[in-house]
Length: 118
Image (cartoon, rainbow, N blue to C red):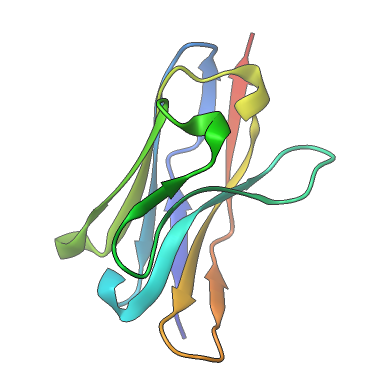
């Protein structure tokens, strides 16, 4: 069973920074893609940033220039560096790992809360 464990959330003031970590069981290369999603209060879960199947990075517009996704292959860990945080970034952040082969299977962590105060 694949395990996905996020950490690093917390409370930060607007303009501050946080780094989220996502540790997975097995190599990050064993998955077709890995990334971060978030769910803000009263909203649906949405994509934040991912490593695509080809190893490229993909960001949604509202985090471009502020968030950076990276990975440490030796630690089987994916990170999300979040800078210039805004109150609207407040959400539960989830790590996702998708299997390489069809039918794709999505593995999710339990989520980590990020709260940005104004």
